[in-house]
Each structure stands twice: as C-alpha cells, then as structure tokens.
Amino acid sequence: MISVRPLSAVLGCEIGGIDLAAGIDAETFTACENALHEHLVAVLPGQRLDPHQFMGFARRFGRPEPHVINQFHHPADPNILILSNVRVDGRPTGLADAGTYFHSDYSYLDVPARCTMLYALDVPATGAGTTFANQRQAWEELPARTKARIEDLVCRHHYGNRDDLDEESRTAASRLTPDQKARVDWVRHPLVRKHRHTGRKALYAVSGSSFGIEGMDDPAAVALLDELKVHATQPKYRFTYNYRPGDVVIWDNASLLHAAPLVDMSRPRTLWRITVKDPGPTLQSFASPRN
Ligand SMILES: [Fe+2]
Image (cartoon, rainbow, N blue to C red; front, side):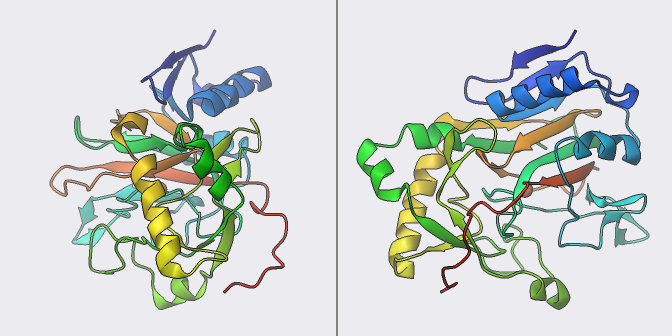
C-alpha cells in the first residue's frame, strides 16, 4: 500500500511505501503520476538505485534527453546529469551551480521537459533545497481582466536567464561552450499552458528563458513578464524542499517554476538528474516567424 502525504499547503507530496529498486506495477505508477499531477512535486524517500534502475523509472514518464551541458553526463548513461560540487584532483565531478533563478527546465527547447527527477546521493543536512513556485495557482488567482489579456499570448524563449546575462555570475544560466551555444535557438511557447494530462492552465516560464512576446515590443514584453514573475513567485506560491539522502524527487515543469540553491562549496553535495521530455511542442503550429 502506498501513502500520499502533502508536504505543504501550496504544493508537494511525499509518497511512501515504494521501493523503486524492486520495480513497481502499472497501478502503482499511475498512483505516482496522479500524485505528481495533483501536488506538482513528488518525493519518494529512502531509495537505493543504480543508474539503470533510476533510468528505468524515468522512462515510464517519457523520453529522457541529455542536457545541453554534456561535460558531466554519467558514464553509465548520458541521460543522467551529475550535479555535484565535489572536486577530485582539482577537477569538478559534476555541474555545481545550475538554475539558481526561477525557471522551468528545457523551456529553451521547442519540446520542453515534462518532468525532472533528482536522486539525492550525498546532500548536506540543511540549506540545500530547491524552491518551487506553483504556477497553476498563480494563474488561477490572477484578476479576470489580466487573464483575458494574456491568455493567448505567445512568448519567445532562448537559453539563459533574462535577469542575469553575465556569464561570470553564479545566478546566470550555466555557461555553454561555443559548440553548445550553436545548438540552442529561439523557440515559441504559450504564456499560459494547458496541462497535457489534467487540462488545467498555468503560467509558463514567466521567469528564466522568456525574453519576448510576439506582437509586442521588447520593453513592453519584458515589463509584462516581470510583472507576472513578481506575482507568480510570491512567498504564498512557494515551497522549498530540503533533500535527504535516498530521496527521489520529481517535479512537473509545465506547472511550476523552480530555483536551485546557491551551493555551499564547502559541503559535499551530489545528485543525479534525469530530464524527461514532453511528447511534443507546446504549440501546434510553428508557422509564425521567429522575430
Ligand atoms: Fe532546473
């Protein structure tokens, strides 16, 4: 028997009674999926997984895709990105800082991430959590007039953090090599997304990779996106989850913004990450020009 316990009033749940290493049946997987769609973040504590077991669970949600940053792929499977501040012989063993500003994973790709999964191997006891913001609730609580004004808008996205483009900064997007930069382009997403599984609407990636809105000049678009970001990241929409060793944490990128912590480099922290893609683009048509 599995149990689902909410972690806060705004989002997050812990699912008990699951041993992923032993494998789960279809009914248990559906219960996990439903809990994720309801609570947007699902924590499965006390797991002991090898890379193949972790990947096997991830594949049930969809197709994983390796991160554009390919220096820290797991040797057993390139779909696993190693997040770590540990250095061996002076060389980093993983990506240390990643996404320390509010963003949605892979929103700079035309097919973004359905969900992201972290497996915590070695984490400090405190202060190493990810902060999530519930974009479904943020949408629902907008004034009706604002909803009508923004509902059909389409945003232009690109890899990066709209608020910090200084590549030397720890709060910019992780730095890309020239080759990696050549592989990212402008993409389009709706400002308000309908969830593929629940049909519920949410503000989508109003912080992070959104740099413009079609049909608006850039200063006006950024002003609107900034206004929505301030609304959508208010403390009442936020919950921070502090990882424990053995946690598998899954979040729903269509309905959340999240921000990783600025990592304390003096305390070892290592997690594995798998990012699972949506089944297709967020917009049906790509006929409009990328202005
Ligand atoms: Fe992220």
